[in-house]
Length: 154
Image (spheres, one colour):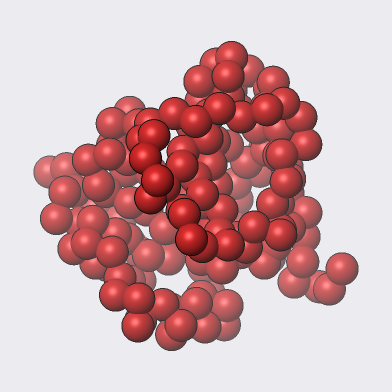
């Protein structure tokens, strides 16, 4: 393991679903979309994105919740129904809900997405903000900036 790699553990509220991720993360984000608001019960959801190979469920078997379509799969604990992580279809990426980490320190939002749906009075200090999702052609530069800049964990 290199200096920038670090293993973190996390799990659902009841502890019947546990996972492990290995840093470095690709990026962190806060999503203000109405779907994330409704699923999280908050003003936004927080995400730590890692490549699929850096994530593993270590205890339990998650179930699909939230959207049940082909575009995105939201995984929940089958017992307490906590929303733990998301896998976008067609990408080798896992979006882990930041509060589900045992130690979420160091993962400040780098991207703020879907600000057009932001609830009144909610402000964040993410260095990159988008009314919807960032255009795909900008992701390479965003990933490089996250990897090189302050605000990343590690």
